[in-house]
Image 1: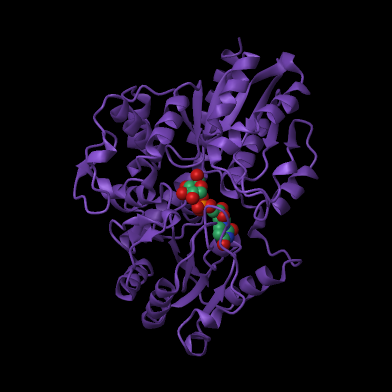
Image 2 (image 1 turned 90 degrees about the vertical axis):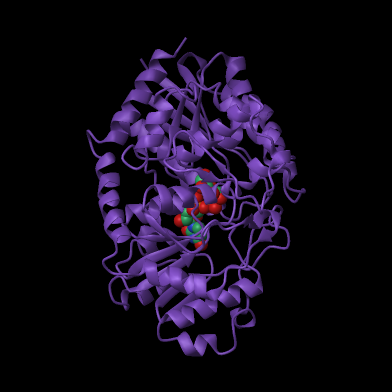
Length: 476
Ligand SMILES: O=c1ccn([C@@H]2O[C@H](COP(=O)(O)OP(=O)(O)O[C@H]3O[C@H](CO)[C@@H](O)[C@H](O)[C@H]3O)[C@@H](O)[C@H]2O)c(=O)[nH]1
């Protein structure tokens, strides 16, 4: 029997790309399955970081995988709205897009964690909803755990002293206590917590949850989720879903070619790469500390440095027109033989290059998976969202990363951030680049497991097959 799934990702590039990889896997795995990916307009009104990617998708024809692009229309140049309101505003357009599909084969909706209000549209049509979770299963379990405690009145943000708290939470699926100050900022904000908790409640309405993780990477969390303690829908670890296409040297892109050429000239595993995701940027004081650390470390480096946005909730960080203004005087002269400062990075192609020996990252989950995929060890410097949890899991629970700063406080999206001193950064970089470290060895082993997971008979393929079988069983 033919089945059709409607997939509604969030429009941000870090959610969209893994969702598209997920959709491709689904249709590859089962030739009776087809998927329509509905691409929502960006909340920012522009489409800067995803427009080229989306344009390329729409020209790639496939009978069983289609893209329905919903234009921004009247929202162009409007004030950006909060994510939940923005998604709510798209419901009518999604109804219209779904109405064009053959309802007799409709088997369900797969929605991103930010698009849970689309469950209402699926319910109107009488089809089940599934969640596609773009981060790890630990962050998912933490969200469920905090929601459960909140609903049972055991978690009160009013009682938490955010930045100075030495309190720790005992979280069932973690092997050690979790410091309250490492909770994502949303879980510590009176204003945001109810929205966050509501999102987790809606996760529980789903028939199943696809997670961009690997069974071998997070076994304890996945066991805990499947044992029923948190009373969640079934979880399917189907990752790592990594967008690998831009790994090749695309000669049309001169900046990328130049970066890759420079890397080819460097010795194997000699370069430390620094990159902080789509929203990562630093004030001038912090930029100087990083520059000093790079100089003192003596290490070869490739540094993706972005200009901070005046209001990151409304506008993404941009590119510097003159990097010398922000870097210490003489920095370029002193480091020109061994370092390169760039803007937006072709990250996957860089991580795939033989010259990269370590990656200083903000711990966005795609970055963590990309570095694991290429066996590159990381130094954790979390900046926003759930990244402090990711850092805790990778450094403390799994021993797969070193740290730049232990228990870093703040969140750059709400304007509060500790200054990290050059000494701390230098120490982290040196530890990261150690040749025969335990972390490097563990990363290599985990990298191999990630590759095996995606082969026939591998854990992620088995989980994907189980998901497809369950989708078919759940058709009413
Ligand atoms: O200069 C850059 C910066 C980023 N990237 C790519 O952009 C993606 C960034 O994704 P990620 O590392 O996950 O970071 P964020 O963009 O910050 O991702 C958001 O979404 C993730 C998945 O839900 C969360 O884990 C993060 O905390 C959240 O901030 C990756 O594929 C990178 O390869 C580049 O190619 N060049």
